[in-house]
Length: 283
Length: 258
Image (tube, each protein chain N blue to C red):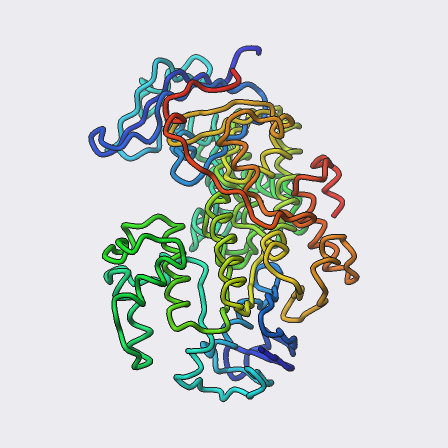
């Protein structure tokens, strides 16, 4: 791999004075690729995403042998440096646009706010023009009209496109998408994914795609990290997911119901305590 | 068992119809699925049947008996509902045991310890969990408690509103197995609402596909499996669900064409 964008080695995150260990010994590198992180709720996948942005509450403790973005040490960067990174160089897309957009501000103004925050020299007119371009880039048909709407007036799929527009307007190099399509219907989900895929390819970004949905990750990502109880238990190419070797990954895949040939009983997971200590498979 | 004819629902005297004349019938001992995107009115149909929304027109009958707009107490001995989010549907400050007893008390039935134990065992929970509060249980355990509460009156019909969408896939598999087992053991009639075609296909024998308050197509599960659906909307929904599944190896670019 060429120079990685993000390099994390042996990251540990704990809450409540170290009593709760949410992430234990996680290491990975992100290049200009689409990296998926899959796991059940509580496996620590979102915590990893937030730790990179340094958005965890102050009651948490993050340690790592190395945690860098380019050559910036994310553990030691001060708040001013982090403000420059958040949004401007690493963008974060959250699950539900209903909760992540400001309900009392027109969507166009919200996108413009992001732009002017990161490019203070840009004037109002320039920001407005940029917003309309960006809304067009996320394939919103009538950007002039949509920019004047409030978040409650747009549908879920459109809300998520607006979130994507807002994140990409500052032209970050890395995008962290935390369950970006889980709140959307299947038909809309594919549109949003296709759009995200195209924008990432065109801008040559690095993407961390956090999801509990294996089928989605399989379709969308180049490489997958499987997390269980705060650890990465397996790393593999998304296209090789079917030949996964870890019993947890195999179990997750088998427990998906299928439309064409449903088994009479779905296999369920039997969790093995040794998964907590075994080394990661597939590095 | 359940017959719905020309059901209409609106959320206010002058507001537009959200369910526009829906009709279907569910024979005793079978599972019927209602599938569609959010906002298509599938949960509204379920709430109208359970009596949670009285602003509805048309006919709903249970076992051949037309139902009055206001449901009698005995209705709830035959029909119980399981909701999507067990965290929202269980009382946070009551123990599992006291929530399970509540339906019995409402129906003036004798309360004894073994009824609660039996129902907890039936849903695969340790009877000792009866003394816990909902927040001391995992998501899957909570959904099992919600199912136990629906089962404690031994109703022949269960209305299931997205019973697994708040759960992880691994836990979803356990709950789907449980629902399939219970149906087999007790000969239950299910009306299952879900946005997930695969969940419906796993449990149901017949499916109605809803869009914008109407049933666009009702079909058997074999047609769903083989992809032989007729209405353009059903085809779109099915191919979007497929595109996403294991068998198809199409790339994202090809999916844009939907």
